[in-house]
Image (cartoon, rainbow, N blue to C red; front, side):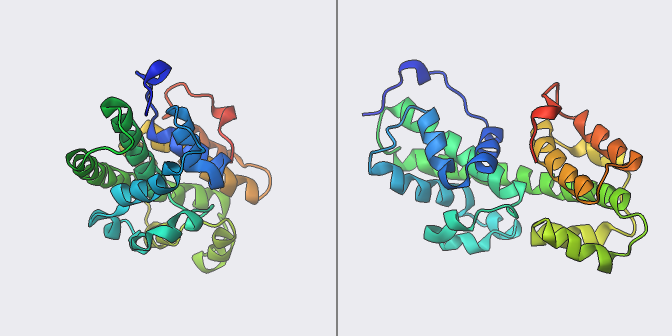
Length: 238
């Protein structure tokens, strides 16, 4: 039986899923389950990851996000790696939070059908937000790339970005905007502070891969950091 105990008012943000994924790729679902007071040794934990993937990415919007491969759900966990974009991570984080909150609220091992349907509908709406945020992030990365590779053309830059394991969909969006980027200030106005965290980490990787961080690169990093609402910038690892 699920216990509420000290977890009665516990709230796990989608950002926490991203942080867990970056730190412990193999244990991301278990870490979240543990945060909600779930016994990691119970067989139910093995099936919950499938439910969370299905709730987060089983709808039509997943195709728009470039996540159609997740219809092969049993392999989904193995496919998450360094190239995974923020759209997937935040969608999974949102669904995981809703799923475990429902287990605690209903004091049951498995939320009811109506609850699961509601979670999937909410996750679809959240995925819309994540898709829009990913688009803004990719366009902001264009400014970092131009600052990091001022004397290179796209054909020369692309192999270096692939080596950094940027998501393929992101690379396509970057290529489409590299010659005529939208103003950085306007793009940052669209950026949700939570999504600024993985964006800052990715831009740091790009800047540091080219050697010493230049003044132009630091200017972009500082602009992104201003979106973090007082979070410790130094604590955000790459």
